[in-house]
Amino acid sequence: MSSNDLTVEEQIARRLEVIANPLELAKEAFIIDSTTNRIIAYELWNHLVEFIKAVWANQLVILIKSKQIGISWTLALLAKHWCYRTGANVIEISSGERAAIDLLDKSRFIEDHLPKYLQQEKTHDGASLISFNNHSRIHTLPSTKDAGVGETASLVIMDENDFHEYASENYANIKPTIDAGGHMVVVSTRNPSQTDSHFIKLYTKAMAKESSFYPMFFGCFVVPGRNEEWYEKTKMDYPLEWQFTHNYPRTLEEALSPITGRSVFDTDILSKMEVRDPIERRPNTSIYFRPSVGMDYVAGADIGGGGGGDYSVLWIEGRQGLSRELCAVIRSNNVQPDTFACLAYDLLKEYLNPMIVCGARGDAYGGSFLKYLVDLQFPRSRIYCSDPKKEKLGYQETDPIQERDIFALEKTIRTGQLRIPYKPAILELMSYQFKEKKDRISPVEGAHNDIVMAMAKANFAWSLVRKAPVITVSYSKTWKGG
Image (cartoon, rainbow, N blue to C red; front, side, top):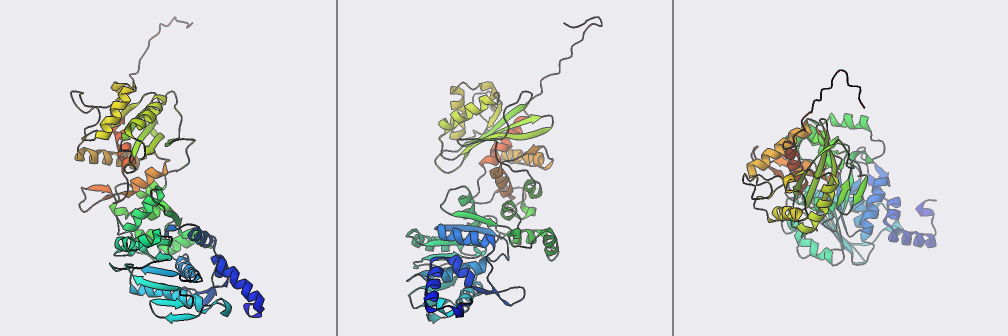
């Protein structure tokens, strides 16, 4: 039965269903197919259902996405649906004026092609503003420095946010109104030329559960019918591979990775690492391999203050032959150094008191951590001290030494000597880049480096570990054993 065949009572009932649920509005919506330029019914693909539900259920949502997966039309649909609420103020902030008008045009198109009984009477219909007779409206703005100032929003949509010139200022302008009860959706494909963008900092904090944003990722294969054949064929249209991979990422790691030419660590190798769940989880601790006789172990540590900022990390590796594996890791940013030392002591003891390298150059946290370890009766001889007099505990490394150790870690990973199943480590490694000068490296702004620093120290620790001498025993030819 078509909408035109519904009785008045059925139309009223259907309108109430649509107002109560944006997924019902989606079933009534029409859009323009960007490939054929034909009007088609909006398709509720699985990832779009997931996205709509997430926006409906969470006050703050942030999404990294592939291009051409239907998100822009879905944002327009959500904006239209929000306007069924009396007095709703939907603000859309796009990268530029043309993009802002295009996004509003999508909401206008959806509205104009709904059945009459689902449409709302417009009181204004302009290039940057649509308002309705229930005092709701959609107001679209380009990303200028003052965009959002003085606005009170029910829903804020920031589309292609990684390309906004004033993303940070816009967020600061409008976030206080969201704190009063509105919703915010921040969406973008990755801008590979941005190494420290506001969008990536927001997403990184969301992933680390350091903000209230609900993080989402949709890769290029979420659209039905896309497969490896489609992927390879589409890639042929791009002269530079990094342009394609950032427009059509397959994984979150690929989406977050910087331009390969700027990366310190080989992103191809990192993306192929076999990431998996630990065999055991303890408070702040992930265990991947239990202690084993015949394995050599070392540990690297990087210590933060425990106040919610930098992380404290203990990284334990095992080696048998030439193959090395992450065995266990402790990571926390809300545990004080003395408590972290207790956690570390128990784990280090479990792994046979390995050699541990911990930075302590001008670092009260690292020095305090090592002192607590000694107080707990961890063998002082198993703590590396770079001080020739052995008066100061820890690794008193300089900036050049730190970079030397990171480059040594890069070689270890590039040559396939270390397997890393721990996803947060992969993400941190991918964030390391060459900055303005090729001899200067650091993670992108807003990213952590605590795991990488602990890994680099564990890598250095292997150079301190010497194999036990091989003892040759000669027996007489007449010895029979016994």
